[in-house]
Length: 278
Image 1 (tube, rainbow, N blue to C red):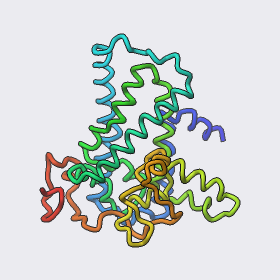
Image 2 (cartoon, rainbow, N blue to C red):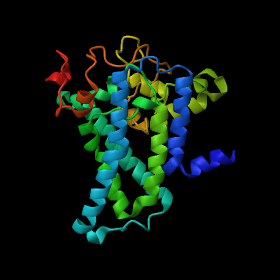
Image 3 (cartoon, one colour):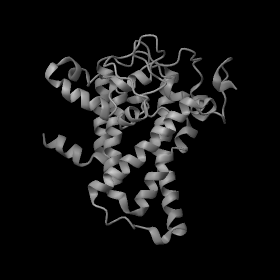
């Protein structure tokens, strides 16, 4: 029990990694990565390297070097804001920005190619949660919004918000259907009703990763929310079925090489007919 308390106290540092590592082991133990081919492993690992280690660190470093020179009078101007108000501001600014960024990459054809990598995985799980092309990652608007708010004095709330969002997002991508008991146990239904309309859960987010919509569950033209599913409810893109898709990934997936999926358009696919070969 003391260890669990320690993990959550250090959620923004090693705590989140410990949780993801534990859940990852459980996914492997239950055989939930049966479709994890070598090419997909390389896509996932390269995406984690760029998306979680290289890009955020570089963006944050250069932004926090540049902003004091460009806007010196605004440094720490919001330090007077109470922690919980800062937390709310960060969550809304970060996640609402990502909702629209994500949604546009589904609705604008040429932007879709930069996000397509995230949907090419024929499975769900911790490993593919960060699966994105390099350019989709480096242009994440919420990274710049959050970094700016940190410069303005909301650093502590930002760290906390980042930890909570990371946990919710990873668990929504997890192949472990942890939300299922809330739908199966009758006295938990009121909690389920509120939860599934507030945050992303496996049922709602898995539907977004469905290979098709013929099963009545898949909804890759909606359910865009990352931390908050509330944005989908507000903007009319929500679909709640409390069920899980029968198939994940892309029906027209050409098994593009990992390097083209991560580095397109710098490196294009060698698969004839692939969107990434154009």
